[in-house]
Amino acid sequence: MATSVATGPSLPEPVVAPTEAILDGDLLIEQSREIAGRHLVGRDRLATLMLAGGFAAAATALAVFVRSERPLAAWTIALFVASYAVASRIDFEIGTGSTVPTQLVLVPMLALLPVQFVPLFVLAGLLLGGLPEYARGLVPVDRSFLRFVNSWHALGAALVLVAAGQPEPTPHNLPIYGLALLAQFGFDFASTALRDRLGLGVSPLSLLRFMAWIWAVDSALTPIAVLAALGSRAHPWLIVASLPLMGLLAYFARERQVRIDHALELSTAYRGTALLLGDVVEADDAYTGLHSRDVVSLVLGVCDRLGVNGGERRDAEFAALLHDVGKIKIPAEIINKPGKLTDEEFDVIKTHTVEGEKLLGQVGGLLGNVGRIVRSCHEDWDGTGYPDGLAGTAIPRVARIVRCCDAFSAMTTDRSYRKALPVAEAVAELHRCSGTDFDPEIVHVLADIVGV
Image (tube, rainbow, N blue to C red; front, side, top):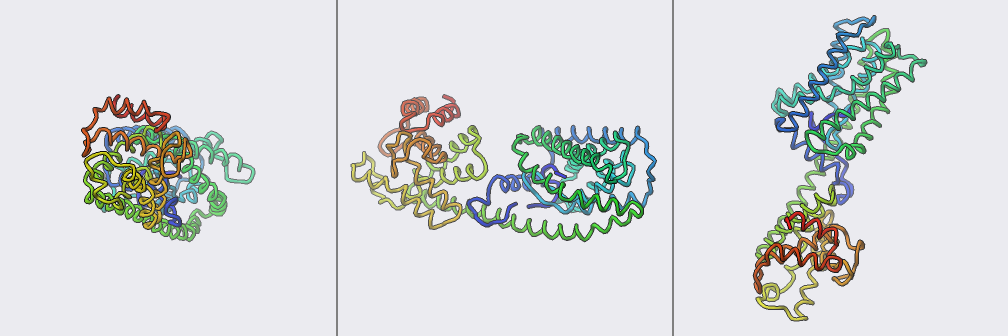
């Protein structure tokens, strides 16, 4: 089962190669953790309440208008709801939500209980599972409405089984249960994608690779859950036999959470190092430091328009901040010279991209990768730039973005030897050099961002 953003504890990928491990999934998880402590507001609140109300109405209608001959014992209900609550707390975070091994309990519930009540029992289990976080104030109580949204998956499976006459989980009826599983996945994706789209602006397509991982987990647990259902037909209390497996999964979930914590801490450390280096540059040359921070905002704006995200967007942010870090190796009298540079002085200036790569390479990891981008931030689209004479798409996309934004910021900032150009004139210069110095697509996007 997929759960919407931040319904409980946390998690990401193991940190093996920092330059690749801290990618889209970890960024989304970091954002999800941050969102978890907030109240539902604005579109997020509206989308959640809409889907929660829809589930409540549909599940109640199913319970009221459908009849079943299966027995409904209070102790059995309590046992299943408690088991579901336990399973819902074993939280494997991924992307904008998480997956939990509730499939081990859901299938026996569908097979042994009156199917029309199962969606409501699932909701009860999810609310019970989240109670400790709400009681301790770790998650705002109004986020309990997300538990309603997260219960839609059970409604999809229940509708299929009700339509089929609530068949027993025998080998003959396995195709029907297979259809119920597909309906579960469909309702799960639809509710999660709709809520994330309306409330958080997350594209449904971007969720597919995360949801595929979640569906793989549910599919792997389903055969075990079917066997548990068959074994519990005569004695429902045997469902507790799944608890040791849940305990093992809880251990793995905890290990994964610790690895993700370390990955996010490492990411924070890289960001802190980048900011520190930026401060060093600013202390040595106030213009370069302030200019770099201005370039960051422009670069991130272009990245958002071009759909650059995940690890590449993070590289862009760091490269924009540190693209001039190599200038701390350039003599101050050249950096701060009030007049035009001589050819020899300009040759010295041109070494700052290579020096920047060397400095960041000494830091290593994520910033070592950024160093390779910094090296290319003065390459020109037509191949006349430095230091390697790269051309066109051979220049890393992030470096092309930084190159264009860097030039615009330089033109619109006062320098020691000239006054800043008006924005319109700077944009006109970008267009004039489009296809020679700059990537034409990036020039077009940047001009649109600055409103010219």
